[in-house]
Length: 305
Image 1 (cartoon, rainbow, N blue to C red):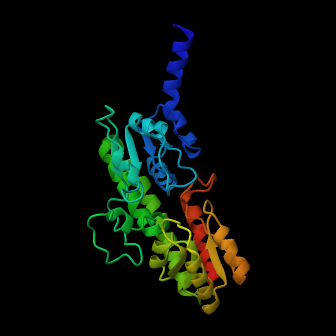
Image 2 (image 1 turned 45 degrees about the horizontal axis):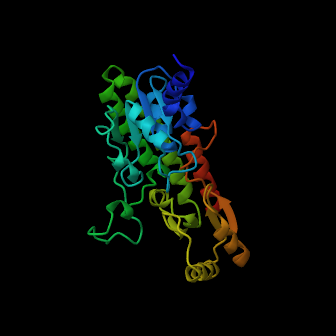
Image 3 (image 1 turned 180 degrees about the vertical axis):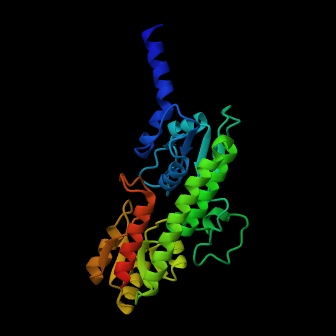
């Protein structure tokens, strides 16, 4: 075989591997089904439920899923897989462009949040769907920051895996049950903690924590919206006035989101900036998903005391 042809074949064979992020490197090749996931929370839950039975990987969404557009290599990795697990048509809107038939692929596309009751973005509850209004833009996708909804999503993943791999159905369900128990215990723990906090309102740079707030009887006030759009000068002035009027002490900022505006507010008002991770990007951590979620809740609870 000519050298150039051999190199081409090697390149093509590696395309799907190139499409995977750092978290994906822990997948076990050659085992069970080849499963590709859209971003970190879906990857983490699928990995926990699947154990070592399948090869679990994640496309190159390690920097976060908002505004993410998959590369050609990402799409090819999905087509080369047996299963593609994603959160929802609300979050991964590009998923609608994936057409296995067109690519002559047998990949099965599964929306893991399909059984969840996703809520409307605050302020958009009464907006009617019509011409020029994308229903996906009206809903908040950040369900993975609510331990109860995460537990429900793990159940969905286990059920789907069990249908695809009936021989291991009980194994998947057992893992999901154990995971659900942990998440519900975490919920119970912080229900008690947040009931005792004197402050119930918190201010965030990006409104990713509406589900967290609703679950624990809190109120989130966002400096930015769900889509992380920078405010206008007029809005910025209103925010500064709000911070002064209501004596806001802390703004929760995030990894992966520009803090230029938050730094401006800090200089103008003296407000404290505290990191709160929306868990959208690859954490590059050996900690489990539930440990990372508890860290968030502990930070929030400590500030609200």
